[in-house]
Length: 260
Length: 354
Image (tube, rainbow over all chains, first blue to last red; front, top):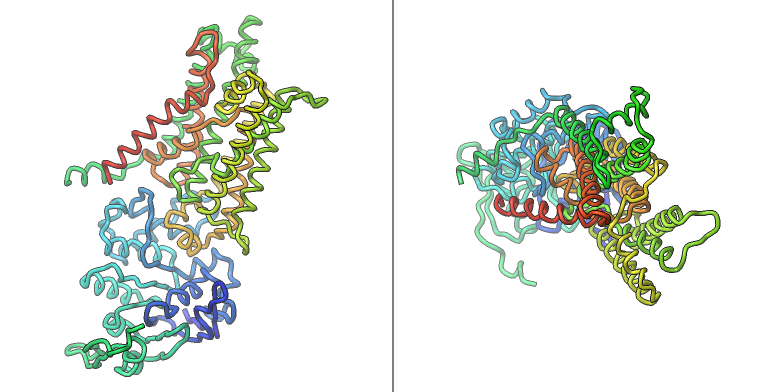
């Protein structure tokens, strides 16, 4: 799905969180949304997910205005995985994944349709073995995979991930991103980890103070100048010894940058 | 650790159709038993004879007295109790999901407090508005009080953009409830009537005494509509499992759903409270019981909860009118006496698992 974000702004209580953000995402690519805490990554992702209406600008998906679509139709095409989903209910993994079928169900239809879709979603997220487990007993990595399966059950053309690897250990981080990469679905992921972004994304968009400071191919965006400017970190960008992709080696925080 | 992992983790749940059928049979047995029991205990054959004759299914001979007792006195009362139990359970299930609060019950939005204000005003400050009997006047006043409380809660809780955040709604409900309680206590104390406090207390705890057919039918129609309506929102309610943002990302228009269901449950509760008083614990406990056995999915929780609530309240009312010879105890006393220990058991079970 082609995504065009056009001069989008969003503010709360008179404070502008993101302003005049434009970007364009080609179908089937993985775009990494980078930026320090408070730069507006999550807000932008929320707007693109249709969860918040922009104060200005618009978001087009395959040429259609996302915020004018009926919520149910939007949810059939755009799926969103939040950073840290929690519930107090005693749901099984299958029941969580089934939530993803809600946008495809009529109000009075019984809940047995799409059994094949559910199985497929669980297979793609590699949780078929967990189907009967209780959500509450899952590890962080398993939970995130379950949420990914729920999102896939929506059969989305656009997948939005809000810092999906935040609570995962290194192995699960790589594992999760490898799975996402292999789906072939247009994906926008807010990420904290530059290493992960460099390894798994086609393109990067860097936000700072609610605006875009850089965007483009990974090698063009991820430079030591940008890392210094946006994160206040001194770093060298090298080629990964095996993949040849950009790879970041940091030296330390630039003196004075984190003061105040 | 491993024992827990294997025993508590199996996710077998009884089929919805089977569970529904079993609960319907249990409800019919409960109603049959409730019709037998009372100041005069009747044999089941006589009860069945009256019911089948009245339903036009048989023409067996019945005595006028049996007919009076079973069909005119007990039947409306038992049916009203069933309807009320079903309605309270559905309200509780819906509100617990919407607010993501395990303690939510039908009286959450200050409704019982508002109803009490109306009822107390009539009981203490004197009935006697022309053209209305005492009972209907009491019901009308309680309904109006409940509506006024609901409006006040909504005014307090609604944000600028028309949002209705659950936490603020619960707090507004608590505030309005306390205000109503203060009024009720004040009026009862200053009235100086010895009888008033007892009558107000009795009303507050609920009773199905003197329920007529017209009221029973009204309550049944309202509750059936409410159950069907709530079932139409089952998927939307499921979507709230991971919170409001998750629900919205699944295409649920969360604000509209919340407004519709909050006002719907409030209207239903107001109807129930107006005729029977504030019967506690059914709306709180039944959804938890049903979730434990049948899982949290609302396609099961709503119909099965309604049946469980109906069975529970039919029995509670039967106990209330038979346990002390020659005297009725408020049905709210029975539901609390049963509901509190059940709730405590659920809490301990959860504490052991957590």
